[in-house]
Length: 292
Length: 242
Image (cartoon, rainbow over all chains, first blue to last red; front, side, top):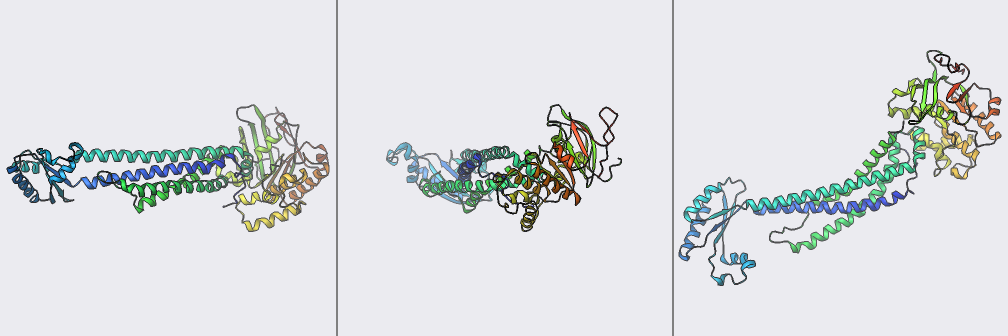
C-alpha cells in the first residue's frame, strides 16, 4: 500500500520551515566532528606506525678516544642482533639540531659532552628481548639506555584515542539532537493536523499509511538540509586538508582523509536523513498507537 | 435473539466514559442484522454521538463487549482494526472533509488507504460524484462548496469503498428539508443494495416520513423496540428487524 502523499497538509507548518535549517546545521556540525574523529584516528595510527618498531639507543658522553670505539661496538652489536633490520648512527650535527631549541645554534661550539644516539629499526615480526639487549649493550658501552618510546607512544596514542572518542561522541550527541528536534517537529505536526489524521485513522488507514505522509514530507526537508550542511562541512574539511598540509611535520601528522574516509563522511548525511525518517515513522506510530 | 448469528453489530452491556469522566452510556445492549436500517434519536448530549463513536471504532467501551462483523472488538489486534474500519462508512456530523483536498481526493481517501490503484480511483470517484449530483464540482475544495454539497461529498466518501455498515451522525443537521429528504432517499438506496444503515438524528419529520425502527438514547440509556426498560433485570439483547 503506497498511497498518495499529501493527504496531511504538512507543507505549511511553521515547524517544518525550520527543519531543513536545523538538520543542515546539525549535519554540518556532525560532519566536522566526524572528520575530526577520523583525522585523529589517522594521526594516532601514524604515530603508532612511526614510533613503534624503532629503538633509540643512547650512549652517555665519554672520552673522545673511547667514544668512537663504544659507538662502533654498540652499532655492531645491534647489527648482529636478530630482529633488528636497520641501524643508523645519528650524526652530531643532527643531535645538535635536536638540541637547538634548548641550547641555541652554537651547540657544537660549546663543546658540551653530548651522548651518542643510534636509531634501530625492528622488524615487524621480531620478538626482541629489550632487557637482554640492554644488558648486552651495557657490557660494550656502560650506561647505555635503550628507549623503545613505549611510554611516550602510549601517552600519545591514548590522547589520540580519547580525542577521537570525544569527537565521535560529539557527533552522536549532535545526531541525537537532530532526532529530538524531529520528534518535536513531528509531534507538533500531529497536533496541528490531529483532525485530518483522525479522519484518515477512522476511514481505515493503517498507522504506516499516516506515518508515510509524515516521512515523505520530512524526507524532502531533511534531504535538502543534510545536503547543504554536508556540502558546507565537507568544504571546510577539504580546506583544512588542503591548506593544513603545510602545518604537518615532526610529530604533527598530515591532516588527510583517505578515499575510504571521505566515502564514510559522505555516508553521514545519508545516515542522518535515514535516521530522521526512521524517527518520524516511530514517532507517528507511537502517537497513533494511543488511538484505538 | 439469540445467538447473534447474522448480527453485523452487537453491543452487550456496554458502558462508555471519556477518560476518567462520568459514564456517558450505561448498559447498552442491542444488535443489528445485516441489511437493516435504523434511526438513532435522542436529545443533544444524550449519547448518540458517543454510541456512534463506539460503532465506528473511534473509542473503546469502558465495559461490556462490542462485536462488529462477528468479531469481538476487544480481542481484535490493533493492526486489524483498520481493516474493520474500512468495512464501516461514516458520515460525520460536521462532515470532517479535508479542506486542502479536492472533492475528488476527499472521496478517494478510503480507496487510497485501502491500497486501490490510482488508475481505478478517478473513474470510480467521478462516477459516484455524478451520482450524488456533484459532477461539476469534482475539483472544488470543500471550503468553496455549500453545506449541502459538502454533505454529499461526505456521503460519497462514506460509501465509495462499499462499506457493509454506514453510520451517519446528524447528517441532516446543516441542510434544509429538501436536501435532507434527498439524502434519506440516497441512504435508502444504499440500504437496498445490502448496506446496514444507522442514522443518528433528532429530525422528527424525517423519522415520520421514513418508517424505520428507531432507537432512542437519553441519559446514556438506550431504549427502543425489543429493549427492556432500565431496571428490569439483565437486558436481553434486542434483535432489530431487518
